[in-house]
Amino acid sequence: MNNLYVADYGNHRVQFFLSGEMNGRTIAGFTGVNGNNASSLDSPGSVALDSQLNLYVNDVSNHRVQKFLRY
Image (tube, rainbow, N blue to C red; front, side, top):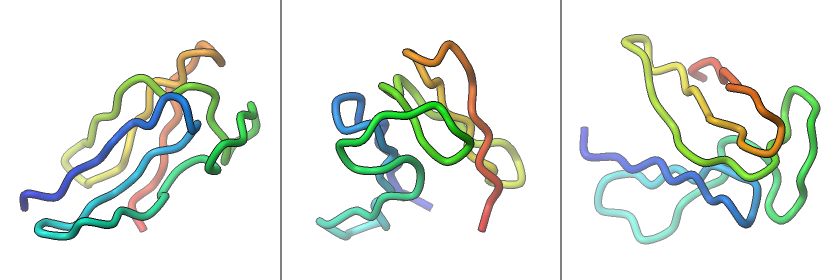
């Protein structure tokens, strides 16, 4: 589908860019705010998708993998 997911380590978020778009939107975490609850991240390092397009985020400083359901 040529969309792009970006783990934005320093801003504690995951950005999603639709194919051909220059502006992304935050789909996980909060810009510039680290945390450890179910909706926040602390230094995401990488992302992966499963066959149902659920998002898995390596939440480095929280020592966990967070799953975000497709919406």
